[in-house]
Length: 298
Image (cartoon, rainbow, N blue to C red; front, side, top):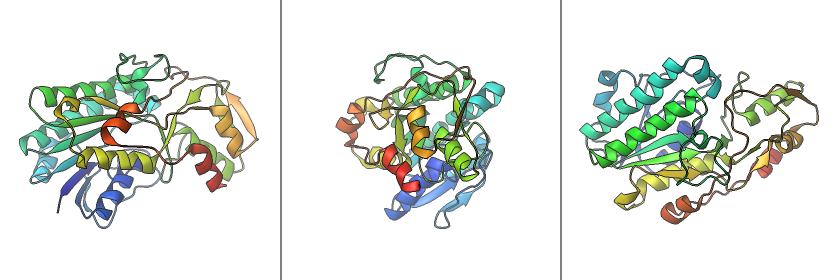
């Protein structure tokens, strides 16, 4: 029976990965310190659960013994909190990632899948392709891209197989809905349920590539289990839908009761994933469109 660790496994994306792993009869170890401001955490009763902090390497290291795969989702994953406290974001996303990689290296883990972010592309021309240079616009993207560099170094220098996923805008069941800085679809659904106006940042013409969390989890499983040539270790893979849609269009699918609020510093105007690499190398194809998913929620 394969054994997998999922860091941040009680959170949005990590919990979906755990569900799929358990369905594949993996033994799963979940590490999560519940430090995010999520209103709910998703501890799967079939996984071996540990409320631990990846910043304390001595507290987590023993869990990596005889582990096959590591899915590293634990992070400070919000742009605005990272802007407000860049030191904390850097600790979690850089030192925490290095701790996870070092544990995986010491125990000869077969592969580490790192959850990164499309915000590393910044204002690069769309569609975003993995060969584009980094254009980090805020402390969050800097800290996550620094984690990517660590993955590449651990692959190139230490021979640890790593795969880096740049997620675009992930949505779906269990997405955070608490607070003004959670993902936009979560905000809109919460506001509609509360009978409030949808708060659209800026003029709403900014376009985003929204990718369903179930498709993201499937990409993680494929990356771990598929036999991948070593030349792709330490490299980026875009995980998006391959199409983008404006925030105004998203809002209109949910409610016409809307209000516009000032734009935020450090956010990109548009993003759009070129997903050819994930399709060609991993055989991954996203299946769920954001329009159809939103309609299913109404």
